[in-house]
Length: 232
Image 1: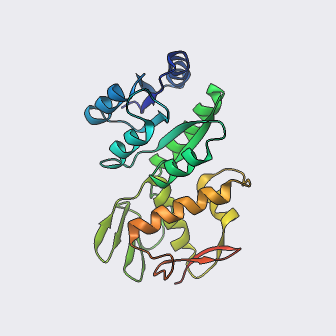
Image 2 (image 1 turned 135 degrees about the horizontal axis):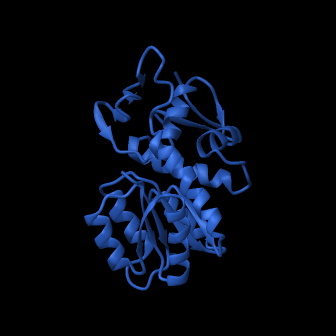
């Protein structure tokens, strides 16, 4: 089955061009030029990735993101206007996996899509040749074969990016993982000044899902000025 990507933007010329580039890479693409059509597609079709413009004439990209995250964990890339740092933070905190700033080059967006799809298709498959598929820390259990996360036997729905962050920290439990190392390993990109904030937002969102109080953390501890650790 072809990888299916949803692209939503009210600028038809941009949307159509992005669609052509993605189709040339062999992806099945559904295009939407407004929020209503996009919402209908999200509810009725199966996707492997979505690209959502924040500013739409009816239902904005954040509302579409909420609709997706209510039922799905596939990657979401947000398109934001230049300098809209608040949009980036809000999108990441709601479960977006990446953002691309307008104006952008179509090839840049295609590259971001490929990176997210690689993470999604390999979700939870690392280190499965080891003796055990399960990693457990104080009631937090990651099953790498089933690709599941539970806390006190209750399932936690993670996006592929959140899962990768948690898995990396648990695999390195007992050690302090620097923000730079976490970003390079999980995002697979070079660390920049804004990367620290990106990591912080995802950690905060992940903590909310696993019921971890930042002021008195059970799992993810913040070592100020250094990074994060999960004590083994």
